[in-house]
Amino acid sequence: MIKVLGSAWALLLGMMLLQVGNGMQGTLLGIRGEIEGFSTFEMSLVMSGYFVGFLFGSRMAPEMIRRVGHVRVFAALASMISAVMILYPVLTDPFAWGAGRILVGFCFSGVYVTAESWLNNAADNQNRGKALSLYMIVQMAGIVSAQALILVADPGGFILFIVPSVLISLAFAPILLSISPTPAFGTAKPLSLRKILRISPLGCVGMFLLGGVFSAQFGMAPVFGAEAGLSVAQISAFVATFFVGSLVLQYPIGWLSDRMDRRRLILGATVICGLGALLGLLFSGMFAMLLVAGVIIGGMSNPLYSLLIAHTNDFLDHDDMAAAAGGMVFINGVGAVAGPVITGWIMGLIGPRGFFLYIVLLMVALAGYALWRMTRRPAPAVEETESYTTVMPSASPMAVTFAQEFDIEAAQDDDDTASVT
Image (cartoon, rainbow, N blue to C red; front, side, top):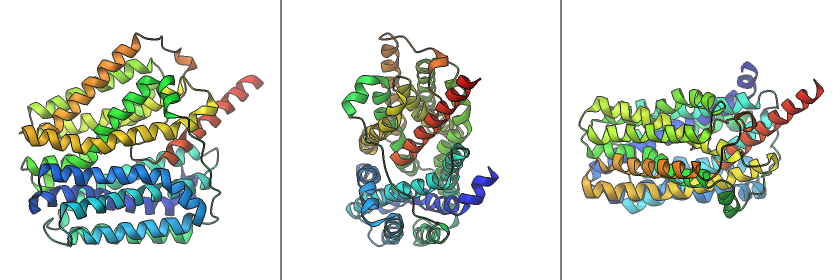
């Protein structure tokens, strides 16, 4: 771990600053939109813009990097993010904000691809797993820290928009001044979506539905808080609970994943997540219960992302795992684009509680489909399943692919060791 920090501390620090800025802008826009009098549906379109941009960015960033290189792509995209942050309070119009969110989502996707390829290049086979774990922890820590920074100034003013812009600008320095050789860039050719769906229907359907849940957490949670009449401090705490829950429960669920039928664990986590959302739906007027609901929803839904990838890998050859990762992330991204819009529509019909009702409905659908799939084919033996890899829904296809490649290498090393002994 010390070796990883010594070789990648600048990259990790820069990425944490970027995540603080990203976490601040999502929560801040949800609060400021209520102050500006934007409708729930308008805010849902604004929040959906990030995931539209991220989806396209994840497909286009690799080609941009091949053409002009990592450094130029990173500097250009991060500069645009910083500029958009400043423009939000100047252009207080839902269409302008929506366009800004699309651009920010596109740029963050490209920044993630660039940084993750640097991180993969800086690590070796002995510490790549630790490097990826640290990267995921840094991402979560940045988003949680961002919620505390929302409290330093009035969300109706300019300061809270300037702070993330400055943080993102500062993130350039440690990364661009410390990165040594530009890494070679290559990506696995993805499997077709039709083939992935045929191999793992539960994995694909689950990833699509989880995209909606994640985008609701990341995009519409602050909108819910603002419409429910929560204070700025309460909204910040509520948004943070989703990521705290994920950070705490990711590894226990991963431990269970390698020791039991993954479909049963997927079903159990889905049911618990749905019960957490039901708790929020029934007791939305009690702030303490909202915090409990947030921890449960985040603690179950985010590990489900890794679980579904691991479940899909159980039916793939090693050579296809990294190739399938890009397709799985794309499916999740399509679900994420629709999530805020549908959430906003339901909230417009029944009020703020529609935020939780949307998650309940998605979890009921996933639980029902998981039960049905369990009747269609037997589960593979536990000792024959692939290992659980911790990845977050906010990661780009690059990080997911690298994580798969690392696990493949580790599994092959274990097989070679076993054959020798």
